[in-house]
Length: 274
Image 1 (spheres, one colour):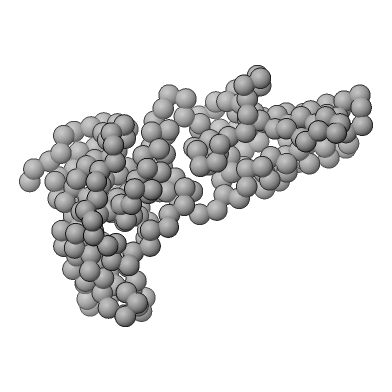
Image 2: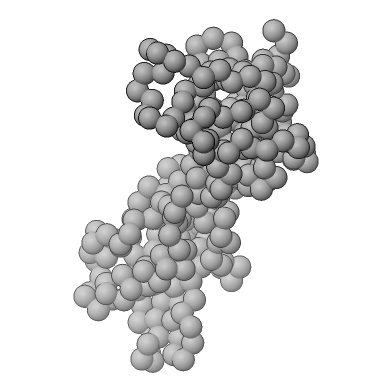
């Protein structure tokens, strides 16, 4: 079976290229509304990401479809690979199983020719994939592919923000004027790289906060832009409250101020969602 060219596990074969043109076919009733958070969770977990067109989809029955709820069918899918977005080499045709709800009339979906993005791990035989989740066969819309490529590009950059694993400590210094103060919060990360948050309050001004990928905050630090990997790491990785261990060395007034400033950051980030 013909294979695509080999790439390393972290290489992005097509991220820098223009999105692959999808065939002008309907998406067979498949949901296309994928949020940035949902795509990021799956993209960061997948070992291979592939752009493909479904060549055939066989609805399984009997024991092969055991455990599939009513109104849903399990399909054995054969798909022709149009491009390797990330991961190691795969054959030109791949196979996988996917459970999908019936169409509005209660009938099986017509999937042949549908362009998809597949987020998966390799199976036990050549060309076999295992999708990493129930929605990991993603309709290949322009928006979905753009988001996915942006996530993967950021994830392999040398300065990619690491996963947040906790909070180490927080400090608060009150100003000389009422309502004035500054809080710094230092985060724990999966690769031990420092990330810090700073919150600045001035009388008669809106509070300002920023994030820096180091323990030192400079004038260039700012809140992360929504739908970026740094935003995702913070919005989905930070605990919902500042832990007591992080403020144990502060007096009660400073600890209260630090907790309030931390909530300001969470509000600014918005919900993780997806």
